[in-house]
Amino acid sequence: MRPGPLNLITDVPGLRVGNAHDARLRSGSTVLVGDGPFTAAVHVMGGAPGTRETDLLAPDKLVQEVDALVLSGGSAFGLDACSGVADLLRAQGRGFAVGDQRVPIVPGAILFDLLNGGDKAWARNPYADLGAAALRAAASEFALGSAGAGFGTATQDLKGGLGSASAVLPSGLTVGALVAVNALGSATVGDTGHFWAALWEEGTEFGGLGPAPRRGPADAPMPRKRMGEATTIAIVATDAALTQAQAQRMAVAAHDGMARALVPSHTLMDGDLVFAAATGAQPLGDPVVDAFQLGHAAATCLARAIARAVYLARSVPGDLQPTWAARHGC
Image (cartoon, rainbow, N blue to C red; front, side):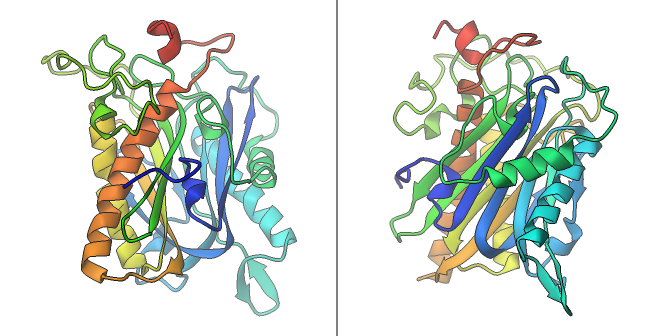
C-alpha cells in the first residue's frame, strides 16, 4: 500500500471535505460530501455516543445511500450541523426522492468540546450555520489539525485535531480516513513525542520519530475527563462497490486503527464511532481478498489520521492544553 497523491480521504474519487469553525466559539464542523449519493454504514464502540440518523444505516433499512456525513463539535447542540447541511443540499435539489420532495440523508456524530474555554453563551444555536459553511467549503484539499470539527478538541495530555490519511491498495482500490480526535486516551507514548501509531507511519507524515524506545507507564490509566467529555469520531471511505453490510464490516475493522493510535480507546467515557462510505466506482475483483484488504487499510489509515490530527494541531490564544509541537520542541 502507498498513500494517495494528497494523503487525504479525498483521494477517493468523487468525495470532497469542507471545514468551518468559529475561533471565539472554539468549535467547528466538518462535512464529507459526494458528487452523488454513496453507500454508508456505521459502527459504535464508545460508551457515550451522540448521533443523528445512524439507525437508518443498518443493512435492513429502506435507505441504502446518503448524501453527506457530518462530524461536529458542540455535543448535542452540534447535531444541528446536519440540519444546516441538509437544508443546503435540499436547496441544491439533492436528497432521497419522496413524491415531488427531496429529503437529503445526512447522518452525523458529535464530540464534546463545551468546556474548552470558548464562548458557549449563544442566543441561537450556531451549528446549523457551521454545517452549511462547511458544505460550501467542500473541496479536494482541506486543512488538518486545528480545523473544522477538530478545532476545539483535546486528548489526555495534548490538543487534539482533525486528521486524514489515504492508501492505494495493490488492486487499485483507494481507502481514506477522516477523524476528529477528542479522546480520553493519549496519542503519544508516556512523556515522549513518539506516537502509538508509529508502526503505521508513511514517511514523515507525523514527525518520523519511529516507535518509542520504551512503552508508556505500566500503571492502570486514570481518566482525566468526565463522563461524556471525550469522543473520537471518524469516517473511512473507499471507491469500492460495497453493500451496506460490507461497508459496516469495514467500519468495524477500522476501529482497530483507533485502538492502535489512542491508549486507552473505546472507553465508557468516549463516544468512539466510525462511519464507512463507499462510492461504488470500482467493483471488487476478489470479494474475499479485496474485502480483507479494505478492512486492514481502513484501520491503518485511521491510525495514521489520528496521529496526524494531533501532530498538526496548532496553538491559539486561550488553549487549555499544549500542542504536540509546543511540548516536543518542533
